[in-house]
Amino acid sequence: MSAPAAPIPLESRASGPLSGTLRVPGDKSISHRALILGALSVGETRISGLLEGEDVLNTAQAMRALGAKVERHGDFAWTVHGVGVGGFAQPAATLDFGNSGTGCRLVMGAVAGCPITAVFDGDASLRSRPMRRILDPLELIGAKVTASAEGGKLPLTLQGASNPVPVVYRTPVASAQIKSAVLLAGLAAPGVTTVIEQEASRDHTELMLKHFGAEIVTTPEGTHGRRIALTGQPELHGAPVIVPADPSSAAFPLVAALIVNGSDLVLSDVMTNPLRTGLFATLREMGASIEEDDVRGDAGEPMARLRVRASKLRGVEVPPERAPSMIDEYLVLAVAAAYAEGTTIMRGLHELRVKESPHRDVRSGDGARVGQAGQGRRHRLHRHQLSGLCSADVQGRGGFRMIIAIDGPAASGKGTMAKRLAAHYGLRHLDTGVIYRAVAHAMLAAGIDLKDEARAAEVAMTLDPSTFDNPALRSHDVGSAASVVSALPRVREALVAFQRQFASAPPGAVLDGRDIGTVICPDAEVKIYVVADPRIRAHRRTLEARSRGEPADEAAILADILARDERDQNRAVAPLKQAPDAYLLDNSHLDIEGGVRAAIDIVEAVRAGRQRV
Image (cartoon, rainbow, N blue to C red; front, side, top):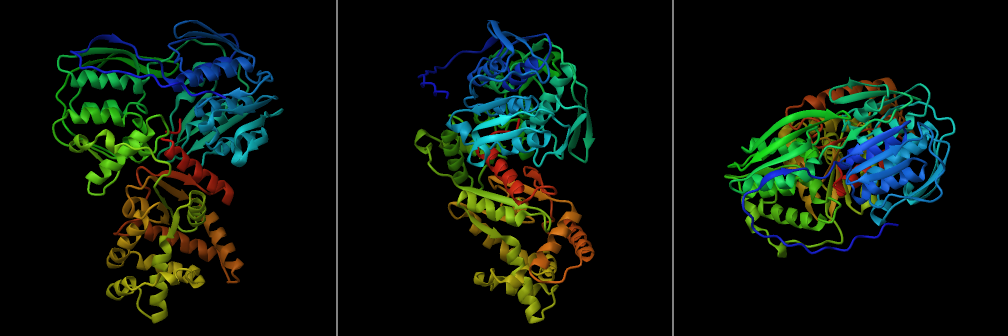
């Protein structure tokens, strides 16, 4: 097990203008992948600029334990003599990844395609993180978990496949770690291994596989997704890799140069992959002088030399959809915002608020303070609020407060998922659909026209919560009536306040419905949008009705579901749609346990502040 490093006291003093040329440390994601693919190649891979932090060094040690020859030849210069695809040797000892989730999960994929058995472990933090989302597809390829801690967590023993098979795997959530693990395992399988993403994730693995000689084809899938097809059993050849400078590390001297008068600083070899440079885009919108030259690529990754000069910055509003490309840079952006004219508003801070890092408590404290200053509108950081922060405001916390918003169409499985998440995290649960069902049921019982908005609003304001457990609310007819009632603006006004009050009470809650993440709780810490094929949803609803002894025509239920989807998605008030910062979870081919595991993985990733890389 890895021991935590002792804290080192630091001092800071005011300085004059910053000038000169600087290369910050190499990017961690590229460093992990260079070592792993070098070990799976034939011949020598020369790596320059490798990040020599503990996480990457643990991956290097794992490659040695698996039979590759990994040597350091000087500062950041390494060579790897690989063993070829499927050539890993049985490790003599446990593979200890310390705190590195990326290294651990990617190596699981690489091991899964080899006929060996390996024990994976890490520190207390890594032991607490979910691994099931990686193991599920690896087991489809032929690997087997023979021992693990509860819930498939570390320490675990993975037995690689003797005869790996290619799969077509649709990731339940957007995750480059899942995708990368499947592709690395698929290297050893004959035929084509395909990964389908409904939302595209970072493409570091695909770019580097091509660099090492793999045949891999990426095509669009739907509106935002990708289909990645990898031809298995290639002979990868060792290739030189220049690890680009980490854009997150570059952010600190870059912002310092912008705010210190007279500064003129050059940062060399900085990665400019658009999925990693949201901060740079934001700073340019603020008026920052950031020039690029010497633009080039290595191992498929774009990089450039950045010239940064002191600039007069102005406040901007950062959209929440930019959060994934700058999740580690919000704090340094806050420094830039403190020196900008006007107000800077940063949206999407819910991922930062619970980031798992040595700075988690500082960030959590800041987030709480800022939330109070912003009239209760959490996760929006205003530049004029920064002066109100002080060390007394920053406190550690033993527990957490969290709102989880789950949206999706009828019968997608969101209700069961929400109940299980609430039980798992000790939060209260509210099925917001039940509220509208209760209104609809009362109106049907009283013979009131469902489109009578005034009468419907009266019913909504006099609801008795004790009736929410009435089994009659779950009937098909009441569900259809609720879809009509929920589109009435005055009914929605009467019930929105109730839902928000429920969500905001400590310690938080899990709410599921059709507009929780977009309207009811737009600043929820976690947002999940659950979908499933309409035919599968109709079949599920049919089985539910028959289990209650009710007659059910599956074709009629399907027609009704399609009509409800059309009505919900196109209603004038709060239409059903995915929030820009919600995680998409396709529940079509997951059983209850698999869907709940995927949802827990999303929550844990957000709580840990990890973009799924």
